[in-house]
Length: 574
Image 1: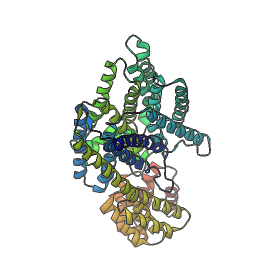
Image 2: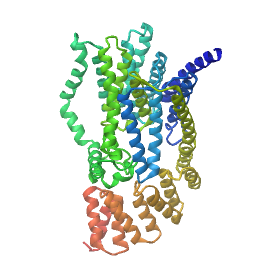
Image 3: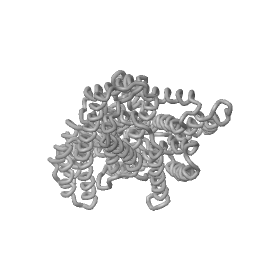
Image 4: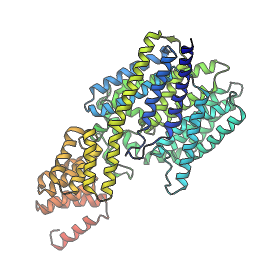
């Protein structure tokens, strides 16, 4: 009996530490030696699953679920696996599948845990510290409030959740006066940091989530308090409608959405395969996208989570995702409304979930574990509030051991296969920036030896080979990327054309410049290089001049084009 009591006490300790790791350490941890220094946050998710599943085993906890949410969850999980298996680029699917496995395990564990008061303290404390860091960054030398998330929008996408839950906790009678003062300090710092980020979608979504909390926590006898938040929010939107319309029409997202819609039209039912958006999007991208100042050579996401899910997993995948999230939120909100003494903290959970869903109409935050891990955690918490089925412990023990073993294996795998290559990649970038091209090459080769599908490192390796005069190695590396890893990645064809030009093969250079022009007809560097081939190697002034005119139309002040025109006039060729 003493051993059993000890195990149950250990179980509670494991559960507490699991919450501390996910909710306090997770938001604050980063690993600066790595190029992607926030990928280490994934490890806190795996550790959370390890400790929580271990606590369930020691506490002999049976797996509980509610059919209304769990059946859509199982169907969505099966569909994710199917779209991963059918994806043409398996390495892209594998990367995304790793993250979904993490999210699904967090969901299953969170569905069977009781949200402790101390967990609110952990999350509010980490949010407070992260907010202070962001504020100091903004007013310091950095002038860029990324906090511990690598990107201001990722920070805002995460911050919404602890802010809304802390707001709900501040309204709860279960928290004492001094506790509420501490929560208010976080709310003040958090909202100020959120405003500094200037993410319009995150600011709107946060207040939308808070309005949801007020709506759920207020009875019909006080309609002003119940609906006032929504009314003020939508009145503000109505007053700012002309400005919002201008933002929308001039924003780069409209081009991304149009391209993604064309992509969906081509393969609507099952999509292009999990994790394969980035590989196929270039063929559907709206060309005028490149005229926008915020355009980049590679588009990794649709800037709309629902379009992104639909492009990769089809309409079926999107509907199943909506079924999972929608059922968890709807049935919990209904239960809270029916229960006159409904737990206000769970109203904060509902508010946080709807805020994340609203924010991701315009953002990429759910493409990042710093938001998605916590979204699926809250989704599990909300589903667990309505458990009406339990399995026997014999089956549950198998499930908990499976989660424990898979989490441990994935933590080791992520450390070696994902994080370690990022360390060598950053060392390679540092070496190249310091002029040590050989050192850069050595580090990029180390990345490829660990993870041969890291196309960013391969691309930089090919470029470094070109800088070092190792043209054949550069050519071969670019072609390996193009044929095996990522066709038409970034400016691969442009760079490959330049390599061929340096090797004295203008015909092949012209071929690859032509491919790049089809993908981006507004790349003036490619147009200038193409013109130079016609002038120098083909002696075709007419075709060369045609490309120069394209350059002038795009960039009227282009110096190369101006000098060519002057030279041709001087020689009497035009």
